[in-house]
Image (cartoon, rainbow, N blue to C red; front, top):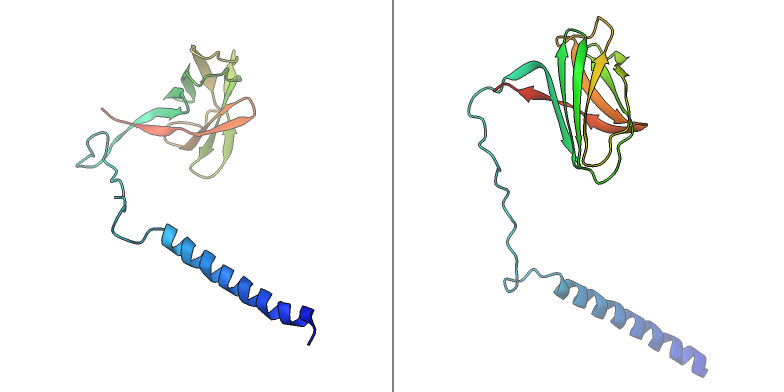
Length: 158
């Protein structure tokens, strides 16, 4: 038998042993033992949980994420949008649309829509077609420029 043929089985054995060693070390490094184990953190509520039914203020919506807060108050098919920008950057001009309870997409018209500088607040007047009322709204979506920032949440009644 030539020298090359005798070396090949030894290389396979070395490779096989190396794989088992790596597997054994990987298993040992993942823990599983009692020493050095960590406890899973338990989430605690930051405010009291409601004990009864939650009621919402009709026509009032709130939004908050990433330093941007907004409130939307409807009276009929008109609304007032108040935005506070603490996002660290300028926000493009706001836009809104409503998804009605029937699934219809209805755009709002914001008079004087303009960008909002970081650290600034702005108030805008919004109008919707007459069929949009606090009773027909299913979901209100907030946009800044072409970016969809997400949905408003109904505001809980005080």
